[in-house]
Structure formats: C-alpha cells, structure tokens
Image (cartoon, rainbow, N blue to C red):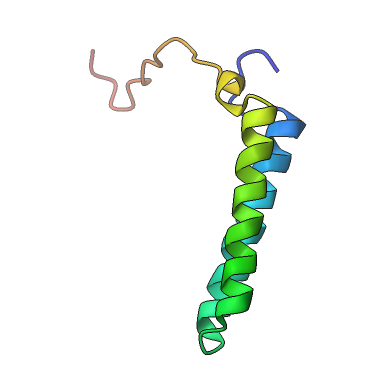
Length: 76
C-alpha cells in the first residue's frame, strides 16, 4: 500500500481488538457499573496492545510528502 495511510490487515486486527475492549468496558460502565465486565474489557485492550506490539504497528505508518492545497479562489 505505498502512498496510503490505510495500514496493513494485521495492524487493523490490533485496532479492532482494542476497539472491542473499549466497547466492552464502556458498556460495562453503563450497566451499573459492572466491574467484572469492565475489567474483562481492560483485559481485551491489553491483549490488543500485545498484538499491536507483536505486529510492530508503529512501523506501518507511511509518511507522504506534504500536500499543497489547490487554490480554490483563482488567486496565486
């Protein structure tokens, strides 16, 4: 994916696992709070963090050259 900020599927897997953990934790806080479910969500987030480290998610970023905006008003 040269020139893209889309990321690789393995990086998206880590992001999705972390997002599921935040969702579980957020729902748990709305349900009472349900602390058991909240800590289960925190555990899911930790697993997602381990996956992110294992797939080296930070090397997945592609830095493009700065973009120059197109002049919309006809002025130079």
